[in-house]
Length: 309
Ligand SMILES: O=C[C@H](O)COP(=O)(O)O
Image (cartoon, rainbow, N blue to C red; front, side, top):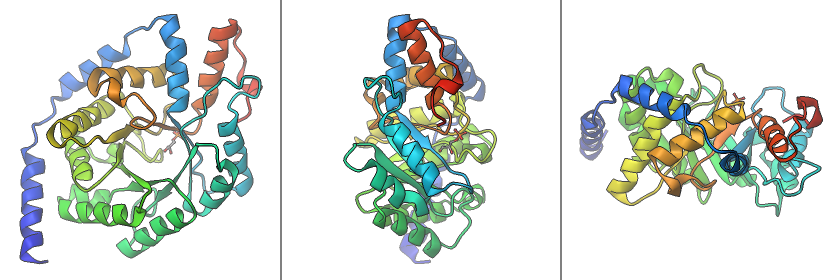
């Protein structure tokens, strides 16, 4: 390691450990208070459409096939076959070997193709393999890369290693946007969530994302609140806006709306667009569609009415 790198590593550690500690009770109380807010029916209709447009419609199963990805893309292009006014989700998120299938199915639609990379979900692979994974996804046409951080290195305090990997993956992304998954369910404390958020942003993340969806707990409101505070404070300090993506375990309209309230009350209205806020979910869209239909018609369509998401 060069002297410059050692100095950089020391500065990074001092910076991350100099961040104010998170008041655990305060954060949990605030998240619970915001979650209890009710919103008017007229605002609910708007919120549902906003949430649909912020979904990263995801399939990340070992058993995924080109056929399943094509079906998911068809759903993204026309979420409700009977209602062309329903907005499209922001992106379809798949494993890197299926990016080409999604790119082909979505071309010209404006729906982005996101790909997990860097040995998702564990992140356990040599950097060369992570970069190759990233480049393969970008070459296949991915607009967005969802990378995982090396939680082992982070928890061992090797922040420089995590920083360097993120920076290298960002470079490999070229024009593709980089979402950095912190896997907050493995980070143990809110202080670590705050540190990992700042580390990722300083290393070049375009988005910070809570979870892979493969570890429990996945997204939670308090963790997302800490991340929203981080992007707000990072923007105030640097002028650069970073997006936030809670992902994993978000399945109901009620939950999705709670996240939107949290964004509005923490980072502010500027973040309430698909450019700066996403919800990663494999099975939220249908509930949003059912609630949307219920608000419009007063009739609740059962889950069988919509195609699987
Ligand atoms: O990034 C998105 C997550 O993998 C989706 O998780 P989920 O299946 O719990 O919705």
